Each structure stands twice: as C-alpha cells, then as structure tokens.
Length: 256
Image (cartoon, rainbow, N blue to C red; front, side, top):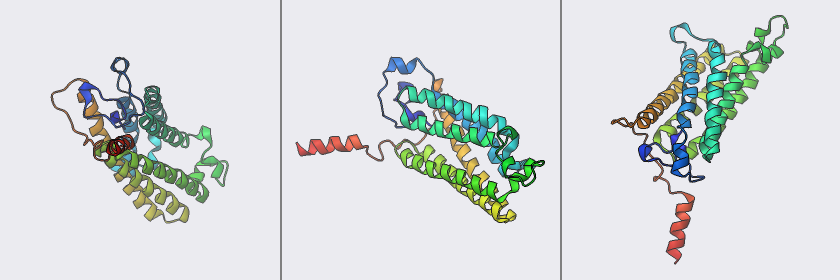
C-alpha cells in the first residue's frame, strides 16, 4: 500500500503516498527500486485467493487453509521486505503498514499449521486436533485478532486521507472485511453457523474490493516504472487536507 509513502520522483508524480518524514535525495532514491510494488505483490497474492475462498468460489473454502504457505512466505515475507525497505528510506507510514500486514499474514498462516499448535490446544480430544477449530474458545479468541487488526486499519484509514483515494477505499474495504470476519468467528463460537457463514462470505466480498484497489495501485506503479504512456490515476489527496507544518507556516506568515 503505497508508493505514496515515498518522496516524489519525476517519473512517478501521481504515485506518492504523502509520507514526508524525511526528504530523500534523488541519487539515493534512484539507487533502489520501488519497495511498495514488492509489498503489494505479497499483499495481493495472499488476499486475492483468500477472498475467493471465503466467498466459496468453485467450491473453495476452509478459511483459506490451502494457501497457508503463501500467507507466510508471500504475504509475510514480501510485506516485511517492503516494510524494511521503506523504513530504511524514512517512510514511516508505509513501513508501519507493511510490517503490520506482514505480521498478520505470518500469524494467519502459522495458525493453520499443526506445528504451531494454535488450534490443537483447544481440541477436546488430543488425538483429533482439528476439533479445536470448532471450539468456542478458539473462535472467540481469533475474533479478537481480527478486531484488533480492524482497529489498526482504522488508524491507517485516517492517515490515508492525506495520501490518495485508492488507499482510502482499500482500507475501508479491509476494515469492513475484518469486522465481518470478527462477527463470523464470534457467531461460530455462539453456534450460529448459518449467520457465521454469511458473515464470512461478506468478509470475503469486502476483501475482494480491497484487492481490486490493490491491483489498480500495483498496475499504476508498474506502468509508471516503465514510463508507460498511459498512467492510472490514484486520486491524490495530499492537498485536500493541509498538513500540520503547512498550517503552521501559514499561521507564522499571517502573524508577521
């Protein structure tokens, strides 16, 4: 999520994410590729199949367990790589977003692997660890994970109001999806499996909306990186809400 979390490059003027924690000189910026694109690939290769699985397309399901390795190595690995790269060039907003989503995907993928004993500990029968997936305690506990991630994305949403429309829509969809999944886990713990299933499908649909925004953003970055004659707009919002330093500058000028 965000080229717009970088200093402005002449060839990518419509892509900046508005993070101005530190100005990076052009020679240093041009020495490295765009880490945002790498992180977006990890995000999309994890979330796109998960959203389809949650919606049950072509008989898919089981909370996306089939892609658990992708969540860890694609989602977690590429997002942490992108987060580290953004952190090294001083882009706080981008690095926090990427690190947070990387941690979520690593946690999500690891929880599906028997080695980590995430669900086996809740099973009433140690010989059948998968029974823990249907337990009240397990589903109630996982609901707090998705709820916490929804709260975190609410903060990201506020920050994205100074970035671009694409990110505003993406974070809105992610928050909606995580809220639906929280309800799905808690309704599963209550025994309301039909309602839980509907909430899971709704969460998948919202995630799919976030993926649509993410694919658009990735395409925009890739086209800009090769100086393609057609550019995809992201809807820059950096001038819509004035920054604190800009407001202080105007205030100081008005008092002189």
